[in-house]
Image (cartoon, rainbow, N blue to C red; front, side, top):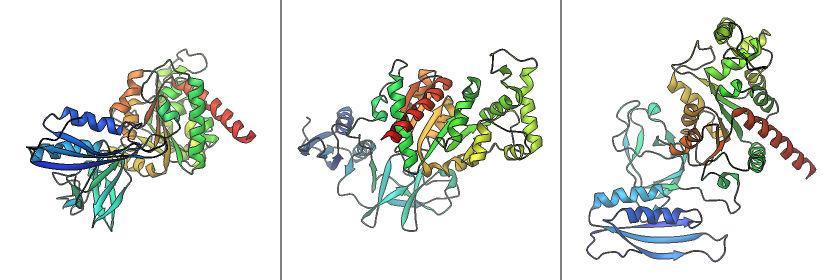
Length: 419
């Protein structure tokens, strides 16, 4: 343990609360302090609790000979879940213009956050990373930079802001089971069984299960599994791009995906234009809903999603052919459309779509159970690297994952029925 130096000119005190030992918060805080050699610390109080269910507590005094250096260090400790003692209210500055934040705005994380206003701590609604905090009508909410209005009181600096790192469950659940390392050599049967039980629990709680899907779902022949999950009420929201929707409907019109026959995996004659003909057919019909109503589209992922009337957000990209009328081509509007359903989502399954997964992951709070599935291990780790630390990574192809998840859900439902 380092000792505080009497020559230090600035002192701040922090507190750590909760299960700070087995959650790793205490070790991470000490690691940050060790890396900052110009600061010294004293553990003034420490209580580990008497039993494994008791919360623990620590109070540390931190000293440095430079105010700016200590402020920077305190900011890093906040990110690890430290609470600063004797803190004043959060400071605000008006947004100088629509879509423009004050220079020193507080940049949010996806962890539960509170701000101190008038001596009281207020929860910040809709935690999301890389946004700002705006005080409004006696409350506080997360606002993306593009949606800030001129004059909005935006929180600046770190004073009066408290971040709560999720505590690890006392029972090791699926999202602690394998989130620390990604590997294809894991007991998938047990993992997917536990995942299926978590999924059913999310649905029973009234939250939605979101699939963020890439076109590989259709290319690998997994479309029918996803369609069945939607029809059965196990997937209750769908975010995708133009490609998944187009290739799903191509498979219904022509039996191909990107011109490859889904029955025998051989290229179809003139198959390379099938997706273009699909786009054209949907544009002529005026969109997916019209195609269904006219009897043009009778099955598939998009058919089931529209028939179940679940939230569907299709986001465009510069690579799109067409796109079909249902695709939102303005990326800011697409973010707003996805963000509108985020408070309803309790679990997100990101299946074989790296960039879309990162985009959606940036919108989700840390409390949302998130699963990233891809055949490429580096793609699976990318989501965690981008800040979605709650993510469970599974190295599997789309078809195997959706097939085995479907079977696991059936088994979990049978367990519930027999219980």
